[in-house]
Amino acid sequence: MTLPAFATFLEEHRVPVYRFLLASVGPGDTDDCFQETFLAALRAYPKLREESNLRAWVLTIATRKAIDHGRARARRAVPVEQLPERATHEQADGDPELWRAVGALPERQRAAVVHRYVLDLPYADVARVLGCSEEAARASAYEGRKKLRTMRELEELGGKP
Amino acid sequence: MTKEFGSMRRADVDGASRLAAQAVIDAARRLGLEDVAVATIDSPVGELLVAGTHRGLVRVAYPDEPPDVVIEELAETLSPRVLEDPRALDLVRRQLEEYFEGRRDRFEVRLDWTLAPSGFSRKVLEATARIPFGSVSTYGEMAKRAGSPRAARAAGNALHDNPIPPPAGSGSTAAVSGGRSSCSAWRGP
Image (cartoon, rainbow over all chains, first blue to last red; front, side, top):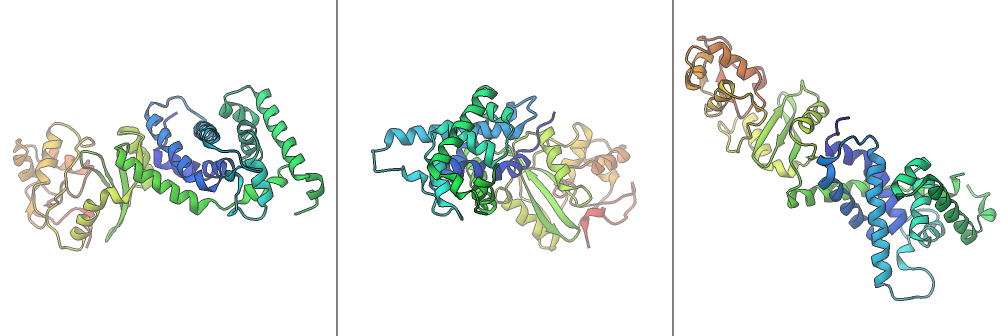
């Protein structure tokens, strides 16, 4: 397979990468992580061969950036009451509780949940992106979703449009 | 199943991701990671695609070549690190605009000959790049300037394979060897 021009690749994947990062690291840090992701991709791009799944490839980089970012933040963080600041997605439309709750999940569970339920990645790709087995990817998404449900008492909200 | 994630799935990130992508392009240019910059410009003959490398202007494509196809060709032949970056091509875009408005007869941009054929054809193109716009030359004349006075036909062929018309070949080169017909199709009105 020939690689598309990076311009084509960037145009094709900017939306899912941005959406993933917005849900993962919050609006304040999305732009930085986005830039780090695509610059890392650009550096590696010419050496990329036999890569048929460019979406999974770039989301793998984005996921690593999001996880690194979360860890760096955790190292710097001083304990505060309740949730970390990154979890506040004020500019997110509609459902701020959801964004907050997703932001409060552990990194890997959050990544699994966003890839699976927000970006609709098949589990094979979620596994690839997280660097784990498909079973582990399913487990992370399942655990994450269960936690979200507890946090949000989804049963009660189920009737909302 | 995914309804509960509706607000995340629907969040409008098109504008924000476009701006973020532009920031990536700006950073790539600063970091020297942009191997090929491309941009389109309007001209009397339609939209042109121009491409530049670190070495200089490498390709000018006329409207009969779809920009998407040209961009992928550049990715394949030069480097996949092709970015749409009009700012990187400001100088050449301005000069081409002036050229098409009739306010410029020479280009002052560096040229990257990577995509030009090698050998004699290349010499022809280099020679034409030195002809001021508006002066007339013939294929025979071009062949002479390229060092092979009898190779008028070959000179003509070289001009057809020109990857950077203008600036290379931007003087009027007559279509008939020895004759003085008027100029190439891409000149415009």
